[in-house]
Length: 191
Image (cartoon, rainbow, N blue to C red; front, side, top):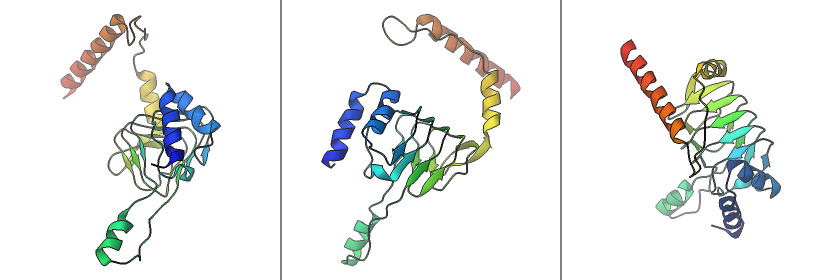
């Protein structure tokens, strides 16, 4: 890891919230671009951070990998005992109003269009036009964003209380388990 990436990775670890990490990236001009009202849970700075652009209102969950290069050229050059192959690098362009779920991998030369949700555990290996929910390996279109919005509006709201010891209060934990059991009972009765 070079000094630039090491210094900024340490800086990211010192930021305790995702919003502060995004502001850190912007303040120190680490990426090619990062917009306003963003949240980044990742702490590790990718190899070529200047090849990543993040728009406004982009929320990136934990363990998202930005892979904007590969090292296949090294294996090929060793195999053929030549230096005919070079490293493949490419940009990652994330537009406005995007959520990227945990454990997603984004490969080089892709755009994630505006108004998009990428489900957890996805592989984004080609550009996504936007205005929808995408998920899977590789990521495929699941439904329009409006369907997810409507489903979220129908979700039972709960009051989230914090414990004085940290984490959720016992009351909130019980409400979550009760809601989950009702959901499971309903789904099992429909099958």
